Image (cartoon, rainbow, N blue to C red; front, side, top):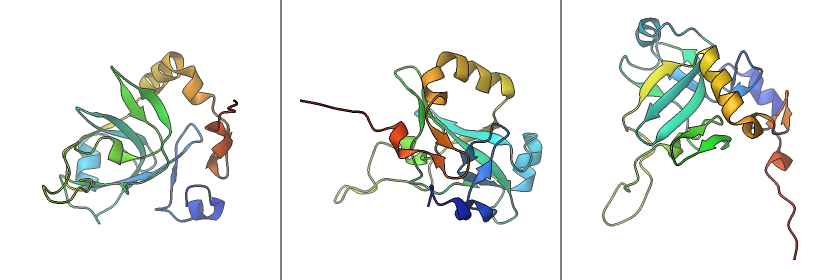
Length: 158
């Protein structure tokens, strides 16, 4: 539903950041948000040793203290793809989920219950990313629907 404009009317559908980008909501308990000076609508990052995924803060009692929640499977919108930095702006937190599958007998991604840290994204941090990765911020983007499919389509030929 990333490209359905009316879906963004639902408070938990997407969170519009100060930069106009529609971020995947990250549900945060008020106590955790307060301890990190995070307000509703702030751009935040969840991160671990695998990388960073950005999202929009959605402060709610519906998630317990010490935990966060962000739907997985969002549209990928990579800012950086390594080897030193791995940053996704689209909210695809499966990019930072564990490499190992959930079972020895059947592979499945562990897209819940993995360790991350949470922090507010500062304006200066976002500015550094814009300067370092200008092509990521120059992709075609519709203010109503979000990232445009043709921002990723490349012309090929024989």
